Image (cartoon, rainbow, N blue to C red; front, top):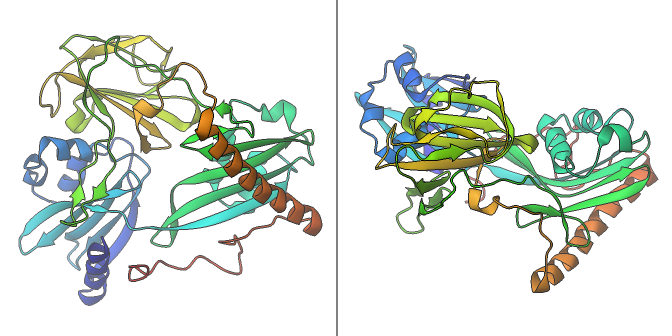
Length: 399
C-alpha cells in the first residue's frame, strides 16, 4: 500500500495530474465507474468470481480517490471496500490493471468528557465535530438507556475511543473502548471486550440478537478479513460473510427485524436483499433464486420472516446462500453475532475482564474528575483542539 500511495502522489506531482476525492453514489456500480471513465469492461469480466463479489462490497457514501491526467483520462483510482482493503485501478501503457491493496491508515486514541446541556448526541457532536462518534455512542447504549426519559441536564458522560485517519481525514467508524453515561447522576459504565459491551460485573448489556437465515446450517466458506501475506507481501482476499450450503429454492428468512434497503440485482452477488437493523447493523442475503413478492425497498420485516429462496445467481460456484453482516458498513463475522440470549462472562475470562474493566473505569473516572476540576471538556492523547489541526499522514512514517 505504501508503494501505491507514493506512486499516486508522484504521478500527481510529476505529470500535472488532477486528483479529486469523490463520494460513491447510491445505486452506482463498479461497471458504471468503468463506463464513465472509458475503461474497458474486460477489467471487470476478467476478474475471478471472488474478486467480482468484492466489487459489489463498495457501499454508498464511501469516499474514494480518482487521479486523471491533463486530458481527463483516468490513470489511477483508490476505492475502499471496508476499512482494511481497497481496489487500486491504474493505467500502465495502454492497459488498465486492478489489484487489491491494504488501506494504509493511522490510528489515534481520544477521550471526551462533557456535561449534558441539550442531549448527549447533540453535545457530543458539537464538542467533537464527529457525527460518527455521536451515533456510535447512542448505539452503544441503545439497549440499556432511554436517553429522552432517563438523562437530565447536568448529567455527565465520558468516552474512551480510537479513530482511524486516512489522507488526513477521519475514516471508518470510531471504536469506542469504554464509556460512562450518567442517568440522573447515576453512572452507567460500558466496557468493550471481545467485540461486545459489558457492565462492570461482566454481564452483556448491549447487543442485537440475530438468528440464522436457514433452518439447517452447513458452512462451506467462513468469514475472513483482508490480510497481507507475511512472505509474498500480497493481499489475501477477504470473504465478507459466510457461505451456507442450500439447494435452489430453500427458504431464506430474515436474521432480524428491520427495514429493507435494497432488493434486486447486486453485481457479483446476483439477486440479493439487504436489511437495515437497529444499532447500525445491516444483513445481506445473496445469490438468491427469487425474492418474496412482499419484500420491497422501504418495507419492514420481522425476525424469521420469509424473504426469498436460495439459488445460484450472480457469480457463484454452486447453489448456496451468502450471508453477510455489517455494522456501520464494517464487515463483521456473522458467527460471532448469532445468538439467542445476552451472555455473561465466566471463569478465567471473567477474572481477566474484571481487572481490565476496573482499569478502564479508572480512566473514565479520571476524565470526569478533570471535567469537574476545569468545568470544561477534557481530552488526552490526540487532542480535539482547533488550534492543533490534524496533520496529513506521511506514508513514509511508521514503516
